Amino acid sequence: MIAKIDKIALWEALKLKLEEELGIMEKAQKQSQEGATHEEGRAEGDKDMRATEVSYLARGQALRVVELTEGLTKLSVVRPRAFRPSDPLAMGAIVQLEDQDSGEQSTFLLAPAGAGARLQVSVGPGERMLELVVLTASSPLGRSLLGQHVGDEVELSVPAKKRSYVVVEVA
Image (tube, rainbow, N blue to C red; front, side, top):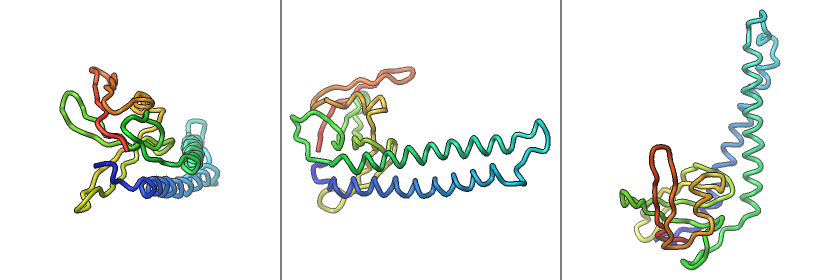
């Protein structure tokens, strides 16, 4: 089923999503930076922390702008390719996992950026919609999946319990 997903279109959708987020974050960061240096934001006493708080916000937003810019560069360098069931999982793979406890299946895109992004794609006849979640190597599940194959079991320790998944399909 996931083999029918247009990976190039999916990759472009992820890039577009990050570009949109970057535009929003750049505007927000600029507004915060202006607020931190605006005359009305100056401290009125030694306990007034408004300007300091706004400058912390602007700094955090600036770091997010850098992170998104680097992510877009990584997405431009990595090209998604088709994976066979015998291939080890790597960046660009679409992976379907089955939770061993519940039997539920989830679909993920391994990508160098965009962690947590949710993408809607149509698959197969009748254009059934499928939601994919982007995983990066910095996430515990993403890190565990790299190098695995179809049929392999992946264990993930989350607070209060261990979760076990089986790699069902790859594309």
